[in-house]
Amino acid sequence: MYLNKDIEQILAKHFLGNITDQEDEILRKWIDLSDENKALFQKLSTADKLSVKYKNYTEIDSERAWIRFKKKHIRSSLIIVLRYAATLLLPILIACGMWYFSLDNKKEEKREVAEIVLPGISQATLTLPGNQKRVLTGCSTSPINVNKSTIAVPHNGTLIYSPIVPEKITNSENEPERKQSEEIKAGNNENNTLTTEGGNEFWVKLEDGTVIHLNYNTELRYPVRFGNHERTVYLKGEAYFKIAKDARPFYVITDEGSIKQYGTEFNVNTFSPGRTEVVLVRGKISLSATSKNKETLLKPGQVANLQKNNGGIEVRDVDPATYVGWNYGRLIFNNTTLEDIMQTLKHWYGVNIYFEQESLKNLHFTGDMDRYGSINPILQAIAQTTNIRISIKEKKVIISSFN
Image 1 (tube, one colour):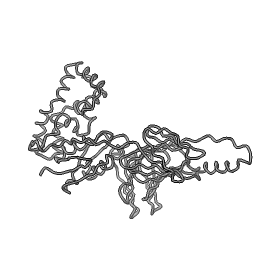
Image 2: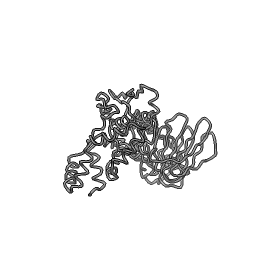
Image 3: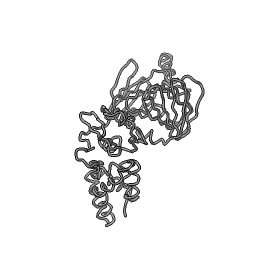
Image 4: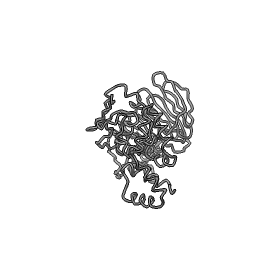
């Protein structure tokens, strides 16, 4: 059977309903290549048979039932095809018609949501010295002269800082300019602040080459030019850092403490009050709480929580993908509570969340979803696996049980 990565993805897009005309033509040609390809496509398209088998297993615990269902009725090759939609295979199966199946098979208990809600966009506000503000979007291209030595150019949703080559100083009349140039070189210049509001995001490439991805509701304060001895930025919210290698250590300062490293990739999240969460992807970093001088080393694949109230630092091993998936355009949930999931969706999609029963907040869900798609497949997958009803109208998400 001819089944490469491109065909896998095109199959997934076909069943999710967002395939292009060109991709559809490729899919048709692939189906006609062999009887085996045709048989696999028909198997994927047969939602009714899958739904009957699925219903037989939902009488037990929903998570165990889904695992048994996959093992018994879906071939490994089929699982590979579906993995592009989500872990648990849900969006594809639901796209095949399973959105409407419930334990008692009542028509009025549909889980699909009709209203389409799209995610945030690339947009941020740049605050310059003197409180000058510039609104930046993914389409912004106009250069910004931040001072006499540096220019910032927006390009495809990234604000890129570059030095302006100074003219050669030849006489004493230029002493003020020489002094200013030396101060800037030493890092004695004012900060810029980049802020994302609502469900927006943005990237910035600092003058040293460090790239920072700001998540929604995030504020990053940084100097236009770093000093000779260290590089320091200040963060509120969440950002993914890809630090340029440099002899000068790089510090990220939050209310709870500081993160120090020299060239690595990590994620910092300060959304929870009184806590800073740091996940190391590669390289090495050290952390220290604001109230203590002791440093704690972090290894790749570990998360550290800095507590503001007692200065404690808790470290444990994790799968970094769950924490940094947003940086790669994914929303990854690993046995995450519905309450935490809805907080993420609330900010990214700009919706309001209402739980009709408090107990529903403690339900758990595992999935890997497209961060730049609409909210609908995510809500539908959650509703299907947790056996709850989710409706959305005028950007208000209402979660209730069938009981």
